[in-house]
Length: 66
Image (cartoon, rainbow, N blue to C red):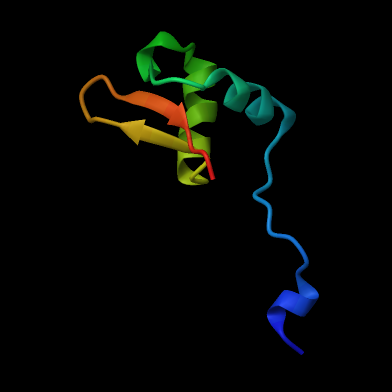
């Protein structure tokens, strides 16, 4: 039995909060412009590859379109 027969779709789990945040990240925005709670959420989404971080000093973030 092949793996693609067992797994029909591949999705990365996102919470409701993450889904709302992804809708707002249509263009590059400074990470520092978000609240501390939102920054924590965005950093989690960066680890899941849902968000792209651009730069090291005052980084900007944008939703990863895949």
